Length: 330
Image (cartoon, rainbow, N blue to C red; front, top):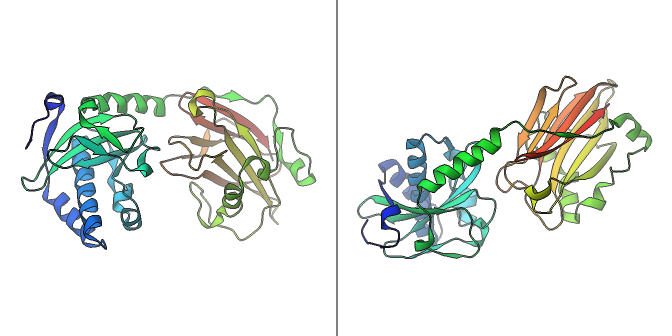
């Protein structure tokens, strides 16, 4: 390191800044409109690339191209320095200048992150230092001396990975929802009009999702749904008292098939789903037919498919070790 911070000196990890990272940072920075934005994007890019190199060395799979720093619109419009960790979520990699003892976390990264790493950047010496890790942030400024050792993130990662890959014991609904009756406006009590569960902005998004289908396995259609209903999903402590909304949309087709779209939305004042919400469609035998998983800053996730009359399927929504299972017949 180019300076010493006694409280965290033993916890830091120096790493080289590769030429690829420097070239990429310069390229991204050259696209920015102001000196302040040039510096911000350059440092953010270097921090992300350094953390990516470290995680690769530790055998942790990442998806650098899916991170917002590689999105030209996001890096110009927001102060983001996130790195996608495969199967887990987004890790924020915040740059710190030499001799700074405070790491700045802009408001837009205070949520939807699996953790935060502070990275000291020394551009002159072409080296960086991983100063430490924190799982959460509550304000824009975080004292560097309060960071945990970077090794703590490795333990945190393995805990999250265990949760993400563990078998999920689902709680099944005792009755099977008969979707054919929905066309006759006969609905189960727990299934309500979408407008009663979502706020106006979310309702607009739910009704106009066809142009951007996250998780769908069909091409967008021009038809209008015949019926759509929603029900609340309470996953308990996993969502801190904020239930999700499960939306089912049906569109009848001329070949006796029914187009079925399943969505999961946040409710209340929540804008985004928490990361790692899993939406799964199971066939009659209980085997996985389709599945999707929320990432950081997803407004909703969805799956879409077609079925014939009297076909059976189930929908599972899960987060961590909590889940619900809803059974349907077309």
